[in-house]
Length: 262
Image (cartoon, rainbow, N blue to C red; front, side, top):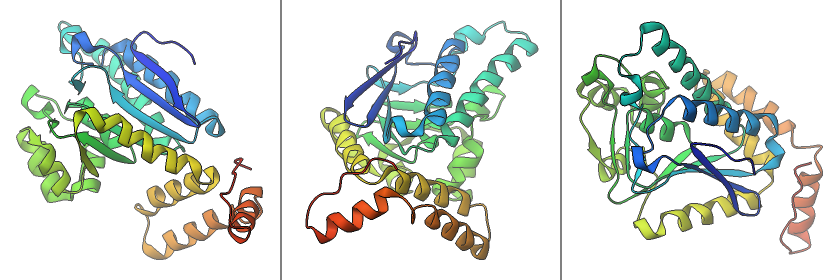
């Protein structure tokens, strides 16, 4: 695995990549280098989707991510601020565009850009002490890494506007009740539970999981008839694959299928 200054990238089990935000001394805040590193990592995932079947995103230490590194941003000119943010935008787009399923394992507070990163994942597991907030409005700015788009899709527009317009933190129980978090875990069990789910996903046909993800994501932006047509096109992509034949054969032979992503 390639090494990075602000990230740790590992393969803890077959077909699963673990990406850890690794600036614990700075609450894993997003500085320019982290933006560059995230862009490189997720661009690589987009370019070689067969290289992994599930990705877990987590943070080092007791915080997932405290948001943008405001110490680094102090004194930036408008041009420097926008140049940095463009790197963040490109990294977020690479995360959202990643065809491989992503699980956010939120190990602590996820504020501002940290919460936005978690929302880029396909679903979220979080520790029982996690807190969330989109605090940008309290700083004279607004979310610019998908927060105003991904949050309404997760919790509904009225709940999202309350969160966005107040900037107030909320608990993991609230996040779970509102449908933003899929599972609340004990801190010592978070990674194990995320890895267990990743193993189940990775054991399924990778073309199938990628097509399902794409169909859900694209369908949300279409009328129902168009979305149904898109779903069938995604479905037809799997009919001529070796994995489709292997899945049916394994079922009839009463054995576990061995998928190869072909």
